[in-house]
Image (cartoon, rainbow, N blue to C red; front, top):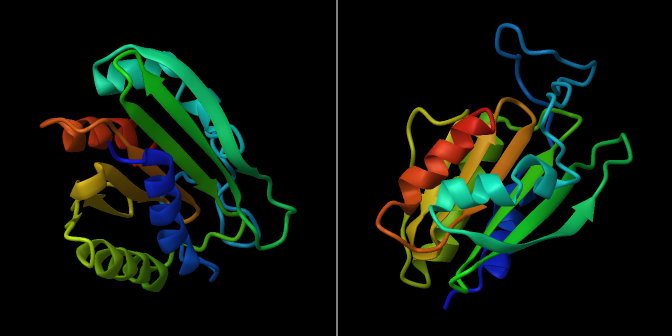
Length: 185
């Protein structure tokens, strides 16, 4: 059995380690603050991933009932360059696990260099353990799928990031893609 929470933390740490630069321009209609990040949209509360993807939404996404959801890894931005993050971990009725990690940066640091570094770092780490990383075209600003742990990493706009880790199934990637789109990708 895979340790999803650890996998999400590892994947998130790799992806987020390369962030921290000011972002580029916003999409048409996207509200931008003075530092280049967009205002967190309604329904996107990176400090409470369980309120964004509740048990019912995860059950619909994964196609199986969720018995438990718990919030962890909460960090609220101090308003400087640090990001707001949290992870919601789910236990399905069959004992399998899922998680959603959300991140929002007040400085809009989803730059091309940061996203490429996250992809490359993840590839090197995962491939060292026999896994694969697949870039996903047309999803968010940039996205990649880590097959060994069934995790979708997606950069959304200039300032949001999500890692969606689902129970292993032939449709995990499609399920994660659908949820990423619901989150704004």
